[in-house]
Amino acid sequence: MSGMNTILYPNVSRVPTNPSVSEGQRTPGEAPLQKGEFDQSLQKALDSRSPNVIQPAGPALNQVAQGVKFSAHATQRLRERQIQFDQETLSRLSDAITKADGKGVQDTLVLTDKAALIVSVPSRTVITAMDRNNLNGNVFTNIDGAVIL
Image (cartoon, rainbow, N blue to C red):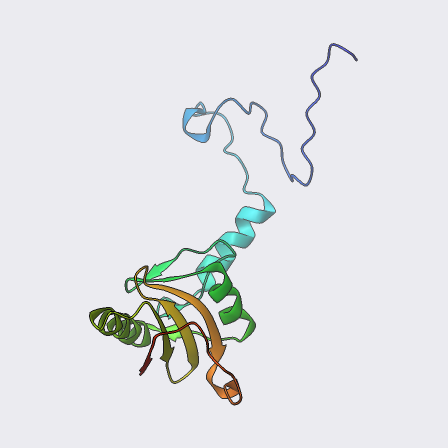
């Protein structure tokens, strides 16, 4: 056993017979690779998404929608608080950031009908989000402007 090269594939539903051959290089008679559980779950999640609603996609999100990016922290907060934006709201958010930029604002509070967002204006990135219904008693710091939509 000392001369054997043993490779372990944990949590893999099927190991390809020849891993050095990609799907495009397979011969016509060879069976295609089967999709694993992860691929199937990912496809199911993508198929179930509504095209008119932005739902942040992952912890390392740098998704751009209407010229607005969402940080990983903001994405997590939006998910936890079940806040979703339609294309119209994203367009209004983008316009609000453009207006704040025109006034020289660096970090702004943007109030929408659903959420309060802290946005880094120069990078057009939403830093964090809070449900609009739970704003009473909160103090927002490190901002130099506010836009109410």
